[in-house]
Image 1: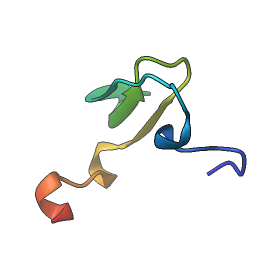
Image 2: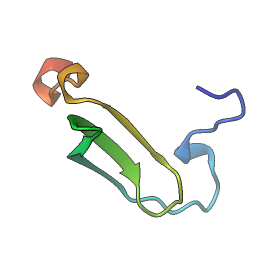
Image 3: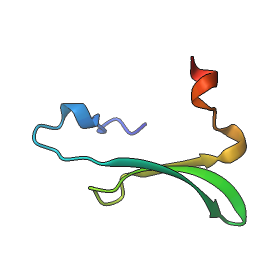
Image 4: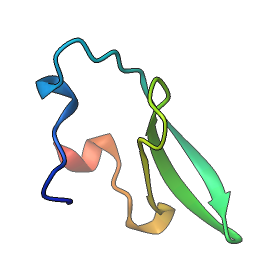
Length: 57
């Protein structure tokens, strides 16, 4: 994480709408999580490295 990064909760007045989808990047499936209310606020991991909600419990 970049040292100057802050969480969405700490940004006063910041609107956010976070969505997730599986998308193909460079011919491989990735889980993409993005805040569609902000430019360049997204991350992607290979689908094989992502965990399910059930695995997080």
